[in-house]
Image 1 (cartoon, rainbow, N blue to C red):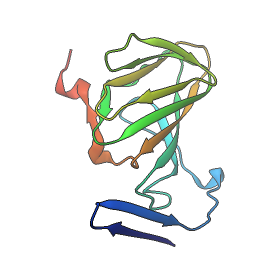
Image 2 (cartoon, rainbow, N blue to C red):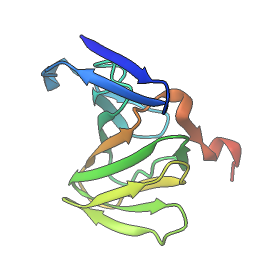
Image 3 (tube, one colour):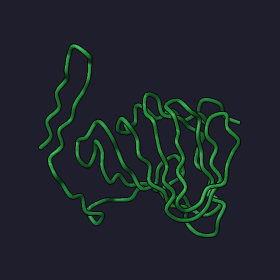
Length: 144
């Protein structure tokens, strides 16, 4: 059970989460329109938590995800397998590999390419939690 309440005077939302274990075997991976496979380990779908979501993403060799951004949510990638090249906002595209962390501010354009021979696997941590309404596909807005 989860209890959420607001402190009205300062607009602070506090979430009290009860202890829970989410087993990976209970999760279903699916292919997204973004060209990557994903399953949500924790968040609005799996636990009802509006403050944070954690999802495992997998990008096949040679694939680049669609250029997109999230409104009103910061995202952090934690690379756990493979190698790639990430583009975030106005910084130069950078190579990433196992153990690297990519911080993506809310509203920053982003995409990642798998430049290796094996699947690129990383965790996506969103604060607040990912919601489809926050996802903006920039390729759909500006086809090239």
